[in-house]
Image (cartoon, rainbow, N blue to C red; front, side, top):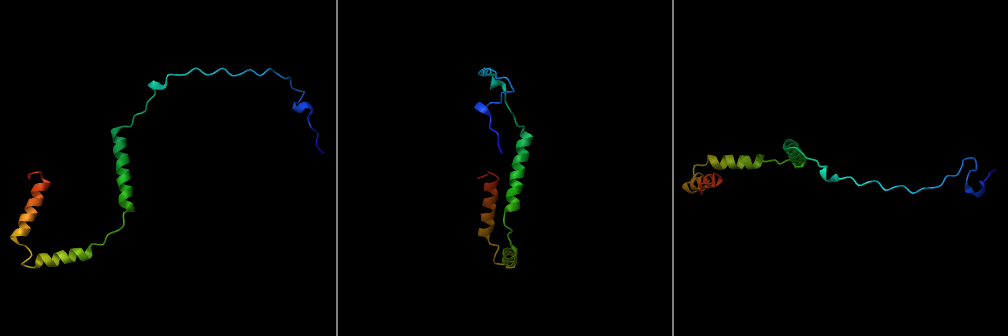
Length: 97
């Protein structure tokens, strides 16, 4: 069995007049700021790179290494053209060219 309230209000408690709330004063938030130290930025960047490296697929270069070893051991592999190309790449990487 259910007993419904009359007029939807419990008459035990006195009714009070509902007054609208006063709007809060606006505060100056222009002085609020946040700064992140350079050390924290570097740590975040380092963590990002560690995550990229960990998620990178594993590469098996054993075949390439063995192929290069066999090429280097051949006497006709090291030519003047190869030496010049390597010297040019080294000079470019050092900013000399």
